[in-house]
Image (cartoon, rainbow, N blue to C red):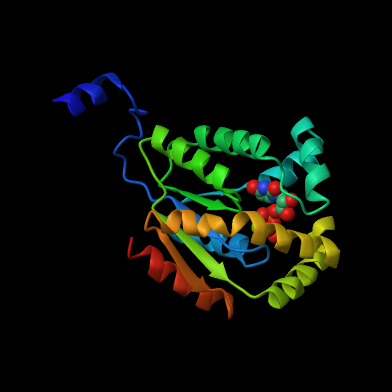
Length: 211
Ligand code: UDP
Ligand code: MG
């Protein structure tokens, strides 16, 4: 009765999304672990909305927006853009796209505070994070992949080994713990990120299909 009443008047949760069947996934892993590549393939297979905060920042930087200019000063050093900026941008993107089968978050969250903000945002939609999948790849492989990508990506942060190493340090210091945060909620899983693109994709889909 109370649930019915709440739903009728849209109290407490977003009445459009509460109880809607969605699958919300965090694709996790160090820089250069293949998140963007695999996210694009997952979108094709499952129809999720791919949200890459790195791509959103590059779009803003490409348009010289105030947000882009602010983000640029951190990104060109391989540092994290402050949580307040990143969380606000992510929130706008999610709220502008409520009617989707699910979200696939790539490159976000990168801190525990961002994880908590994401959980709150999902809860406000009557949703939660159903799965975090980490792609595990060792540091030397990451560096060689990113340097290779840098030849064509046009990304300044992909062309300088010291910036790449800083990104890996930032990942180890601030981001790695996000895995444990979601592991405590029993939604973290890890897959081997080494091998062919199709092999890794098959590992990911077998994990997703269990959820
Ligand atoms: N970045 C950030 N917060 C985000 C996403 C990106 O601070 O939520 C910044 C950070 O400086 C990072 C850069 O943008 O090094 C590139 O991030 P992206 O995820 O695109 O690259 P990847 O880590 O996948 O190589
Ligand atoms: Mg990426």
